[in-house]
Amino acid sequence: MNKAMQGRIEEDKVIFGEIASSIGFLLRLAQVRVFDAFFDKLARHGLKPGEFTMLWVIGLNPGIPQGLLARKLRIKPAHMTKLVQRAVDAGRLTRTVPDDDRRTVLLTLTPDGARFVEEKKPEFLGYLPREAVALDAGEFETLIRLLQRFNGMEDAR
Image (tube, rainbow, N blue to C red; front, side, top):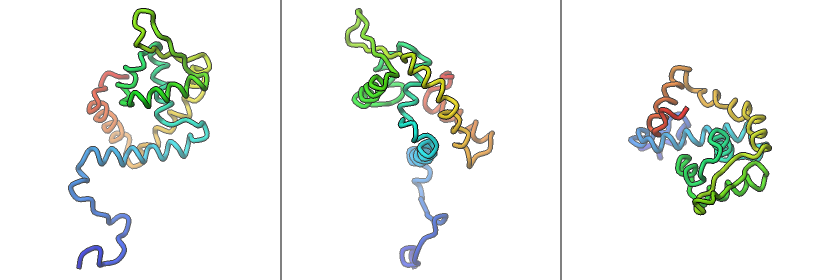
């Protein structure tokens, strides 16, 4: 008798087969799990993980070109434009177009944006240790190191 005919399948008995070895599949499930934790803890700030990440990286790289930031964060240009506009409208970000390259847009946090990132840093980054609930400290560090390597970010810190 096949599984469908046996009745309900218990949650811990679901079989994934070969797809359980797919990095894309596993990363997607991990992303959803991390984002769920992020939203549970930080939804009241009205920001999405990508928005805070954008502000964080701009704060560390003042004057970063918008296109470069979009490429590094793997955000589609049209979506990046919307994220930037939302941050500009919130008073957290300024855009500057240099005289020598009118096609480039440079991004810098406003004083309010810098203050927001600094004030919210403990909360936004404080949820990170909870991402590792199923891993011990060594396993978590190994996972982070491997993901940094996979994404070409070994020297990004």
